[in-house]
Image 1 (spheres, rainbow, N blue to C red):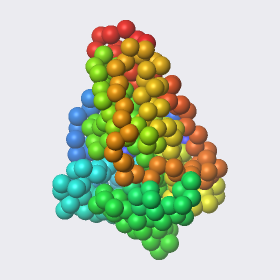
Image 2 (image 1 turned 120 degrees about the horizontal axis):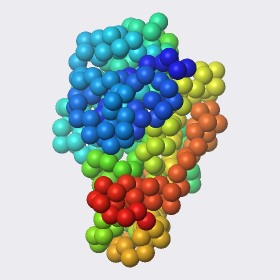
Image 3 (image 1 turned 90 degrees about the vertical axis):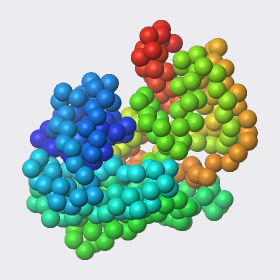
Image 4 (image 1 turned 120 degrees about the vertical axis):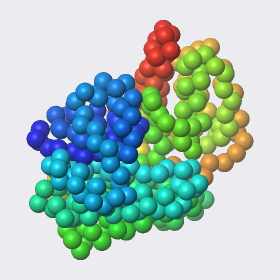
Length: 320
């Protein structure tokens, strides 16, 4: 297994950089393919030296296929995408990157099928409808898919095109539906308030947050990376499906704030129950556990403490 070469699209981003670090730790050769060649997060994780960074444009089919071919890639982990807020502001670009970019990845794998063994790729929990559409306490992969964001719609389309590529062309793929990633060096996104619950108190700043009674799926970025590695390398005969839910720890915003207060007793966090989150969070991940062996490593306490101490160290403060 050590001689696999994994191309990670979006490999210099937040999840991508952790993905690179995880794969290197497992002994794989890794190429970070990204339009940004800023290696800051890779450097923070201590893996920039061992990583081949290749600047590329996912929306350019020739560039994608050339990157896969020239690096002798055996496995692709496709994470690059325009996220919710950016997609909303740039709908055309979202279609180019998220839909056509994913098509370019699948096409490269199809064309170079004697070289590329599998594409593990990021769908999203955003493919689900808003929470009031579900009666079941836990939402599994067979439940209604009806996204209410453009970002979710691009991911839903990608699930369809992945299925066709598998059925018509024999493309070996596994798609995951992660939720909200947290952890050190997170870039701001639509859910930046989640990071602030941890980041502000870590540096001694007060913070007020809404949604206190709403449950969030707190998924540590290292757990997400682990799940994509398992999606890339689980033997095909162990797969009973091709799309899997993955989640972390389900906890309300108030419980998260209390966890931070346990770690930093003088934290000043004000929580209200105002507002409603538009997400479906109670994902059933029985299948990912059974087929891929996915088991989150981090509970809230462990994940938050590690995150807080990285922030404090970077700010020259003592660990907690």
